[in-house]
Image (cartoon, rainbow over all chains, first blue to last red; front, top):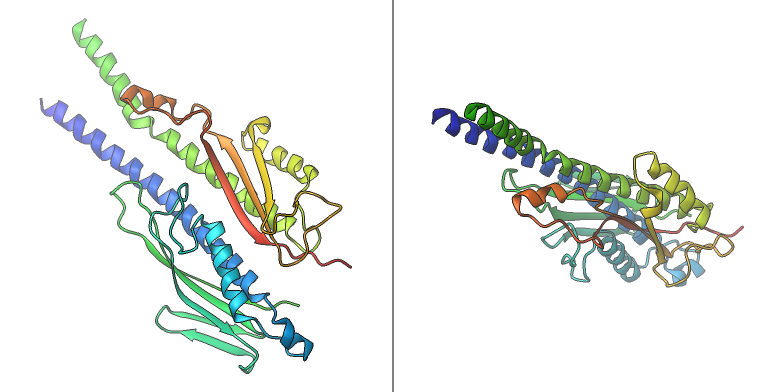
Length: 160
Length: 142
């Protein structure tokens, strides 16, 4: 009897290890994918030149278009809807929160150092650019893993 | 004799219980490989030099993925663009600013069939694992 109980406990323990391992592997994948989505969104947003200002020789980012672009790239790459809620088929289960979206425009003096002590982020830009910080929560497959949440940060400059 | 039978059955049960979850890792890794390939192709295709993902690039990609054990014929490539234009034409590259979208899908290929033994039904034959992404094209004509 003792052996039977021991073997059942061993099986449960073994399966928990498997679950933990698979969940950690998947979490690594998700964090990379989300970081890439944020980088792509920040880069695309930073390229949205304000054409009217460009005619006057001022290189500047159009804030409205940049915001829409960032949102569209972030939502497509992570399969989210316009409100950043996951669509069916997305690997996320909780909505993504954009906690910072800063456009550093031509009115700042460059090189400009953006500091965000709250999320421990610092970046120096030589040109107008965009800083994007988003909060992503990993959907755990099993309850073995402790909750995993990330504040993912990305920055991009206007490249021309 | 009875003890021997119990031993054999238990040994088989143990082996199955302990090693059947290994197949899930194959799935996780395959998914990650598809995503890695999507990211690589977008990096190349949306770069300033190309601005498209054409049939030749897809063939190269099939060869790369075949090296990881994917069956090339089963890989499905979907190339779209944010503007609705065709993103697969080398003669007509996407201009800078348009998003290039790529999705590579692959069937589950009986990987989860072993779960039938514990009563879980495997995903349908039309279900796919996939990697996808959208990247802004950087192509600027000379």
